Amino acid sequence: MINPQSPAGDDRLFSAHAISLLRQEAARSADTHLLRFDLPAFPGIRFYFKDESAHPTGSLKHRLARSLFLYALCNGRLSAGQAVVDASSGSTAISEAWFARLLGLPFIAVMPACTAPGKIHAVQALGALCDLVDDPAEVHQRAAWHAANGACHLDQFGLAERATDWRGNNNIAESIIQQMAHEPDAEPAWIVCGAGTGGTSATIGRYLRYRGMATRLCVAEPAGSAFAEGWKHRDYSAVASRCTLIEGIGRPRVEPGFLFDVVDAVLEVEDADSIAAAWALEAWFGRRYGGSSGTNLSACLKLAAGMRQRSESGSIVSLLCDVGDRYLETIYDRDWLMAGQIDIEQAQRQFAQSVSA
Image (cartoon, rainbow, N blue to C red):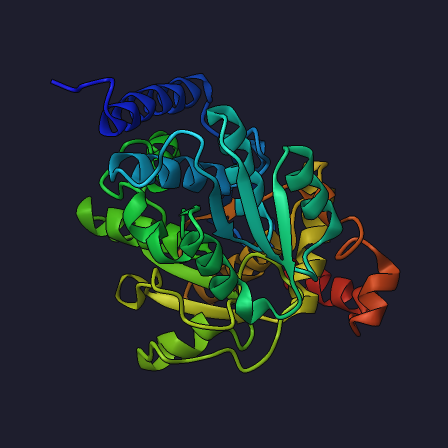
């Protein structure tokens, strides 16, 4: 029996209560929509976009944050009143801050100082502390410092691929396949996602193999990212050959959660193309999405062009990763784009050509 008077008993009682709160939250959360969009230029090819921005915290990282808290609790690493810390470019931090508030825990988000101001404000609005680091490469060290001083490190980059149950439990892959069940091409030809922590691509790739499906997985990445460089040669020491303006993906180093062997293709996308595609998504669906959603769309179009050339038909599924309102001062600001040497008009013209017959 658990002795509630002992420190260990207090931790177990807290964990049981916290896990109950997380289960209740999961039960209240409806699944995200799978939106279909057909393009006349690609006959016989159907596009589907899973709108992960519909989560309460506005991004697909809501799933990850819940899993990371559950993982910490079930491994006995998180105690009542203990501060929680993680390194994040923004969206994960927002979701983690939301769950920390749900559980009554203080949260510290270690973020690059160049993170979109909208994301920083969103974290702070949830009562969390933002520890801004000038050099994005140092966020891991800073998070580790907080952990050494008593905080529980959720460690999204180190634990994402193992914290998520890739066999099911309504993970994102299982959700996609269930939602596709009654579509004309129920087994997608491709599923497309980016690689931030690597957790999403690992979960989808593992699940497809677990189910024995022929669906292939494509990782869409900013040109020159560490994942793209590493995947080509299975080199886990690879680093990015250039920086990117697209937040959340395009890591400068190969993260522990990157599983190259479950990925069938990696397509690199120029920042200008990602941003033009994100702008197009607003025209298609009536709401703004982040730049990584544009990266996904650009990769989908490249895959579809190859399928069309080979006279193939089928479905392509991808993700709309987060809400675009967080990027009003960055990718949706023409002055910011000009400062980043992005010619949005030219990029939009090129995008229009890519979706024309």
